Image (cartoon, rainbow, N blue to C red; front, side):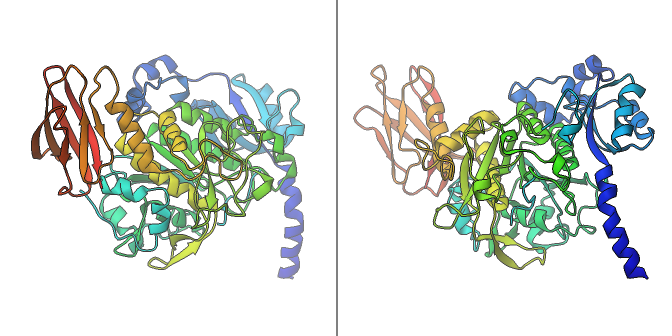
Length: 536
């Protein structure tokens, strides 16, 4: 009898689910906007304010939370369940029957308009696939162990040698579950440093993302960035700080997950997050009426893509998986022109057969770049067990962690500037295609390019080369300089050496210096200049 009841229940459930609709309810206004924007510490952390100020990001009405009074009224409405909220869109994601949802427009004066996830239900405005969301998926010298190939492929190891391991950078990981992350030896270094700054499950509405987690996808993803097992494994950004957010509701495929993602991105912004990694993608749903078309992957249709565009405007850098759908193409938010979309290659740098390809439908080159996504080394939720996994789920966080290290080295660059440096450093920047995008980035080259431009900016024409340097550093003096006083310091400010440089005596032997970053101070009658140089 129990089995028959269960069978009947399973048969009946899909009809119940299809009767329930998902929709975004857009609100007309917010409360006390002018005062809150004028006093941003009431709605943002100081770190978020500092990041916005550093990059000239305007604090505006989108930073003001949704009016909670409105949300309470919507929650009390007949047949309505409030699933998520978005301050950027001033919208609430609701679930209920079509009739009950439409009644909100006439019942509440603060409702501006409603957009159903099922586009056929929208009278005047239409919203526009979810790919399998788990895309099957101090100067420190590290012994990388199993993770060496995936880090060395994009020259992340060279950034580490220069002390850029993510310190001071904050990364939000938006994913499925983070099973056992709180107890694993593979993350003990992360926890001992206090670098898990917070967590939240936007699906279950609690902060227990570890013990109740059945999904280990986020655990594996996080390991590529922050995992650490002495002499066995090192994540690419082991000293960054992290927020861990669950936005993926694994058993179902529903557009509410887009809303959870946007809500998490908004929280990340308010917390001062620098980089978001999302190994998720959306295009098709359990209810086919909710699904996006290929033409919808145009960079500004999917709710999550529009949210990613705002996240970029707010100064964050979003790195996302291209997807594992091959010729079926990228999903959302990978279609956004404002995210760095990462495809996958194998350990030899060749296109991985599953990696989603771009198309002319996307307004910009997709994927942007690629990293190792086949046979990636990951630490499993069984803790010290290291295995290999396939998927752009892993090429994305490897790139995101590398970018956190690069941005640490170039803190005054904007998110757009960092993204462009990464693209320009890639192996086929001059001839991109829809398989590899601009190719495999060289993060050391990206850093050197930025330093070279910065070092030679302005009217001061003293040139220092090569950079990075192996044995000898050379100086080219302008015609109005007869000599330059040169002092070399390590990154802790300790003075290491001094020399006078002239047009004929224009080199210094630095072969005895250890690998790392150094500051060269140049002074002359006409010039005072500091230059960063990498020694390797």
